[in-house]
Length: 116
Length: 113
Image (cartoon, rainbow over all chains, first blue to last red; front, side, top):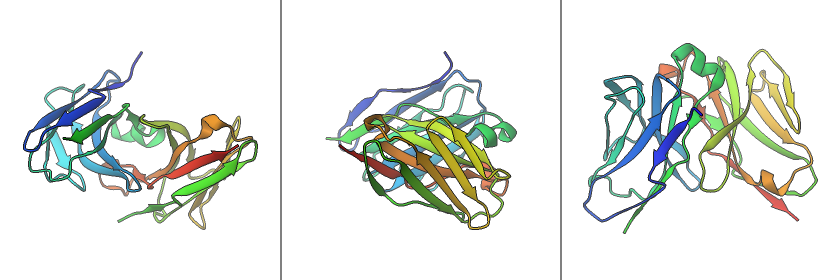
């Protein structure tokens, strides 16, 4: 079955550590997105990529980094510069620009990151 | 920038109808969506409506679009405990930078016994 897989489901980070969240899709989608979700704040866009080897900052990119070396993979690194990283992180993907408007985004099941 | 607004909470008795409302600002919105998020899970697309439609029905779900007032609603008939979730309204428009979809903050639907 085609889908989008995020791993791990739960992740614990010590202060000062960088951690990488994985997002893989086998839908042959062109675009991929990372969102952060905090209670009562909805989804906030961190980074997105519409094509391999290219990505753009979203609304809250500070303290995060991404790469898009392969079409199916869009890992997110939460760096030590992110002062409040505890949150639920969602990855999403969509087809080419014309099709994505009709079918919306497909979401992964999320990674809950906790700073300990 | 463009915005999507929805109330944060709604409580409904089991068996009643739930109506979740949403307003948006982009008059050039092309598609409007409703997503459902169950606890600890990702978002699942429930339904979408094209901007030239007024209504769309799919089993217990009815979507109403008032384009003049930029108002979208989702009605869930015979609400069940499994409908307890957060519901996100979202819109897309060719005017949105890079065709991004804009999401509301979500309405948490609580089912009363």
